[in-house]
Length: 71
Image (cartoon, rainbow, N blue to C red; front, side, top):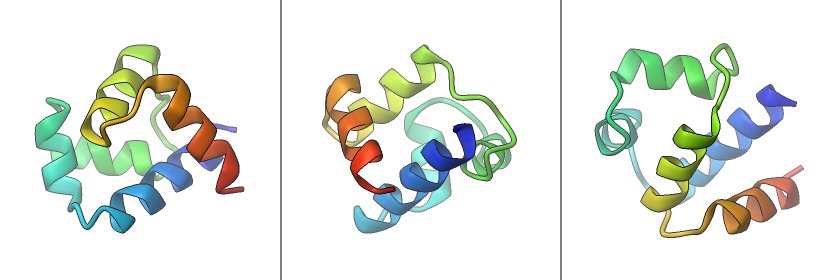
């Protein structure tokens, strides 16, 4: 499940033409740690999910809806 969410976040990031470094900077984490998140190696907690949603200008619920639609 985590890897599916991570892959969908990666796809959404690419669609928004953001780099991993830009995403990492906006959610206050290192690029390496963000890379691990997108690879599904790091769990995405609610705080991080909320920050990611904010970058994409979505609510967490909207983000999860978008992510579930990318399966």
